[in-house]
Image 1 (cartoon, one colour):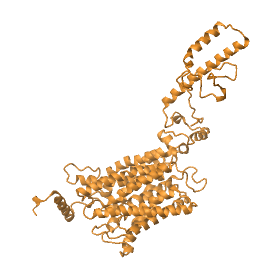
Image 2 (cartoon, rainbow, N blue to C red; image 1 turned 120 degrees about the vertical axis):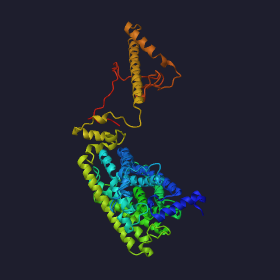
Image 3 (cartoon, one colour; image 1 turned 180 degrees about the vertical axis):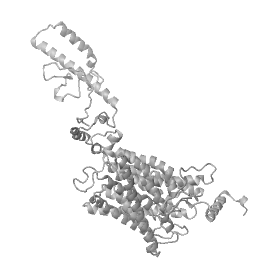
Image 4 (tube, helix red, strand yellow; image 1 turned 45 degrees about the vertical axis):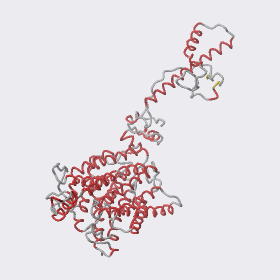
Length: 586
């Protein structure tokens, strides 16, 4: 067949053959149009997992910190994504001459020109890897919830790209020493979840527990919003399908078959995990199902299946997910016994289950012919010997040590510049109020302010913050209407007193001052004689008020009868300034 007579699809296939035979184009950019479409679509869906993480984490913390945790998730994308473009991608997949088995160097500030033939492939690969990087950073935010200084966290999020990108290059980069040894991790049980879980453990241990966390034992604290936590699980479940299926890195050739297998095995793993964690929770809680056992058990099974998502049979996926879920729910209270306060259980879900997910490949992996995912190797239980299991165990050890040590070092340096722990009084008031000027109601804020008042802490900045959910302008208008109504009621009460006294003493004549006063009041109250007007309308001139007890009303006349004969004091309504050292009612 002559080249000039070839169709467009044949030309694309021919280019693929040329790439694979000449090795000019790295495998990361060896994408056809169909592959690029699949990778981009998967990237878009993976980014929705940020919503799931935000909802799950905000549901697990107290209400006074739920906005703060959502802001951290936003910062993870903004700052983490920016640094990934600056240097993160180049540290994982750079093709510079100084790249080495530890770290890639090159392709920083990625921006291929319009004339570059690989522009589309490069951008698709970058976006896909970016979605993984932001996910790994977000995992840590939940473990640091409710006591981390927000400014310090912003610096951490900016630099945490290094913690993820270097080990990602070990496993997936052409330069990486684990990759060259034959390590297998399809969708990131190790580089994404294990590194994120190890960083979560290190950050939670370094920050210390929340105030009063273990004062009454190690039982979990009440959730701020259990419904949000469940909704977060569903969004993460949805995103995980793209996370694993998209990691086939295309649908050309045999890839589409393994993409379908990855999706089904992902669901099978979650089925096994959900079943086991439900049984465990029923047994542990005397027939009651604990919401965090179920949520984290399912997430732990998803983490466990991720590394070899299309290398397993259905029963193997069920078993791997079940064991991962069991490890998760058992290890969560163990971390609490160690004094490591992890509000969302990220150390167990991503750390412990990440280790199991990486090692499981060495036990159950098939050789996915004709793809070279495992470089022709199989797991121990598939007759592949001990080599793959040994490499996977080494990978888990390297990634866990790197995640813990690098995070400790990074937070130690940040703490020298900005304290990573919130001040105790700020922690009591909540990060929403102190960091973002968002005041919730009915969450014990008044009690916290009263307790802090004797300590002479300056609370003037938070006194004037209006509660969320109300319109201050409308509230002031309503108060003015009520004040005007109270004035009218007081004048009507005085008029009744004057009229009653005149009848009692039998004096038909009135003084000129009394007659003039009564005339003025009657004229001002003239609209109230409309019998068709609805009672209690603050916009009318009726004197009936919601502030008066029912037994003080004359139902025939609709006026108020005072309990004393003295003239009420009519004072000007003044704006009440809130004192920072006095608790106000929410």
